[in-house]
Image (cartoon, rainbow, N blue to C red):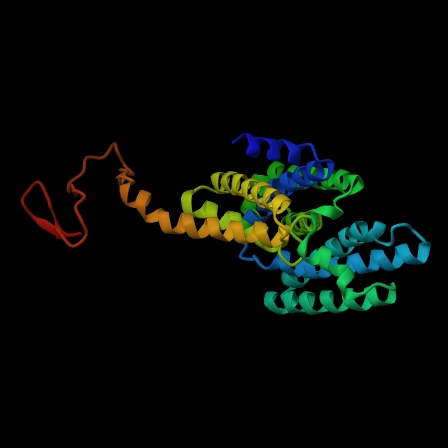
Amino acid sequence: MTTLFSEISLMLTDPLMQRALLAALLVGVSAPVVGTYLVQRKLSLLGDGIGHVALTGVALGWLVGAAMGVVPNDALAIPGAVVAAVLGAVAIELVRERGRTSGDLALALLFYGGIAGGVLLIGLAGGSSGSLMQYLFGSISTVTSADLVLTVVLSAVILLVGVGLRAALFSVSHDEEFARASGLPVRSLNIAVAVVAALTVTVSMRVVGLLLVSALMIVPVAVAQLVTRSFRRTMLVACVVGVLVCVVGLSFTYWNNVSPGATIVVLAIATYLVVAALRPLWVRRRPRVVRDPHPDIPDDVELDLVPSGASDRTPGGDTCSA
């Protein structure tokens, strides 16, 4: 036990792990907030498409940095990813809104164009495809102090929009036609969701990587939907799950030489499988609550709750099927 505490204490005093854990904490909170809206809008793969476009931004930042003689060469990689991801997210939202191209076709264009652009530009910048691996799958050793400051700022923007505009964004995500009829600025709100999704991808790429960031946005929400019913509680539980899997997964990589992004995603999926397997236990025990929609009007027929397949008996002796 003493050895365990000393190992944890050693990890927490390591400046590299301090930066990585703080980044993981921010990513664990912000990613599920945006993911809740994407799941509601049935755009779970949007984060994956934006991640591919951000890869082109990483390579473009690398190319510009090399041309300007910036040291290190990838100093402009994250700013480039932010610009490319935001532009890509807005473009796909406008394409989806006009309906000229189906959503899955627009995502496919992002997937293939993003990967091809990233590999092409990184070659022109003098790098190799291997140089992009740390961005594709995450690397805690690459989280610098400057990256951490940018992560804090972008996470603050994501939470400010995602939580502060929750009522309006939920209305648009749930029923766009109703939101438009209610006078809400639907286009602006849709673009706001796309922009914060792009910012979330770029914030998360240092921890889980661009190819796995979509899982961190979606899987915690899927776990939360197994145990909650309201939108607000789903978002809250998803944030808790996101923080736990990020911190635990990242801590695991401190003692084991494995990919942090892959570890976090596998841990999140394992959590989903465990919760899904245990869910029938508390669902069966949950008592059924009968609510009378008109309590002020006397009932002419009373139904007793009995197991399915049996019959309900009315006070007058008549029966009806359950």
